[in-house]
Image 1 (cartoon, rainbow, N blue to C red):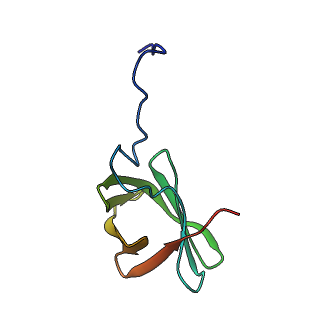
Image 2 (spheres, one colour; image 1 turned 90 degrees about the horizontal axis):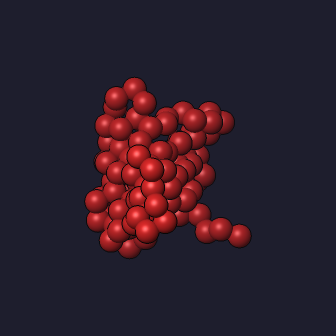
Length: 97
């Protein structure tokens, strides 16, 4: 399909209008787990020294996230008061310098 300048912008799969702004790096308090939520709807999760321990897609509905990793495993998360509660993890968004 050819897009025209007058066409509305396509939304990234990870975030829709009205949904929480989740794009960025989310980190546990000890820094052991670092989850990058990208604007293209993909995520990359590092654990300790293991880069890309888990990768996959995510979607956002309001403040709720649904994850599907590249092996087919599913998980969920919720943003409450700026904190991402992802299964048993508590992650805080890293501020850009």
